Amino acid sequence: LMAVNDTIPASNINAEAVGDEIIEDSVFEEASEWTAPTGVTVDPAASGVANYANVADGLYLQPDPVVNAVAGRVYRTELNIANMTEGGYKVRVGGTEGTLRTSAGTYTEDITAAESTYIAVKNEGETSGNLNSYSVKELHGYDYYNAPAYKFGIVSSVYDKDTGAMKT
Image (tube, rainbow, N blue to C red; front, side):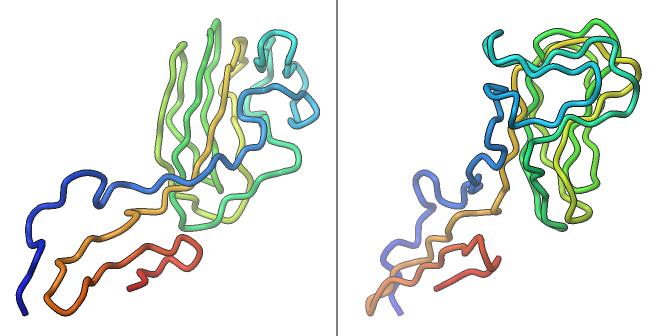
């Protein structure tokens, strides 16, 4: 067979496919869409922040209704900390905790869910500070593979995020 496009592809070939946002209110615009522990206030009036005021160690801020991860899948998390006066935060996805964050900034981390359980933000130590957002999106690996086109047709595959299979 004679290859027609046996060259290195131009752009967006084999790029990571990032899914849609799975937390309905990732920017804290609705207090009713979060289950907050004592000392945490989701404040839409303050341009959407989650305020922590002397919150006891090891409590979880969770979306309401609960959003569960699927064991074995990889999720891209982004946590935006507006300010921090004490303690710290960890993202939690399906039983796996991310890196402890103890200062203001935007932190992106890919986490593989160990089990099919909830997604949340966990505080470490007595915590005071403000979160601007918490985003979680599923990573689907690579979105497609562009195989060489041959004289009798084009062969290509597409990743099916629902089954995890490549479809030709």
